[in-house]
Length: 386
Image 1 (cartoon, rainbow, N blue to C red):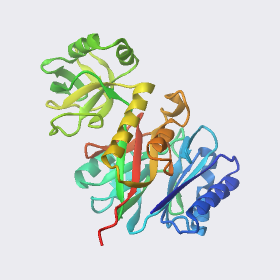
Image 2: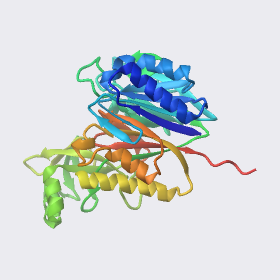
Image 3: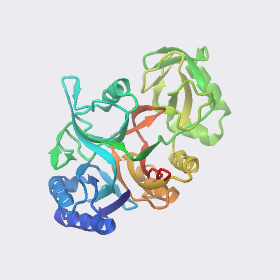
């Protein structure tokens, strides 16, 4: 297995294509590749078909997947709001790759894989492909299928985003590549939050409204928690509060990464708390806070935990799908997420883009996230004993 990444910030599209293709071919040292991912700022949207032609002519990908993004990640950098073209190329021996074109019409999804059990890299258009019902259907009908990726960005109205799959360009729906075989894909979903207080059981709920926690009004429970917090966390609560819902209720304890984090919308006159998710009685929830410090802490902790759990893993590359609300909109320094990823994993080739919704599994189920960094690590499996 071999992965490489290349980036161009040249304004001229043809020159940018030539630059990234030449660089990727140089890094591949003449070896043919199986998969190429292309991430283009809106400045280069019209050149995606030419990009595919150039990739194939240099044997840099039997399959090509890509989309537009308002900001592009490649070669250790995050280029925000400026012309950028990123290319990530991988040689994946003994891996079965299947391209998929997905659409949503009249409330029905078409193009889904026939069976679960593999991993799916998916790029979608947020205006024409609703990720929440799609992932709900996948979770129910294709158990074991992990969906990783993001929703294209950069376009402000339908028809402005671009998706590319093996030379064809689309303005709607989604494109994907299914991967299965001699490959270990590990996912890290950093929702940028830190839990505060302790977990509570929902004892009364109505749709997205948490009425009671532990048989007490939810707002009353929150008020008591707030009074015990240090001033820094009290300020974070005032700036924006979140609720994490435990995905796997059968665990003995709950830690970072066990929660699906959703925003708190507000409270009603009788002490209920409304969030951006449906809630059921019996679910376990915990309040969370988010800011630059906690987002940095969360991503670093999850990356380092993965490295510690797999000290001998041969990680050869990574893809990063990060929220367009991160970058310098959240962090005081540029290139935060990709720099931290490459710091923990020794400068592995990485690429991606800033998405309008990040896809990644939490607790064994697939979800669309916000303000999240969704990472997929490509690991070469250990050779079987002779």
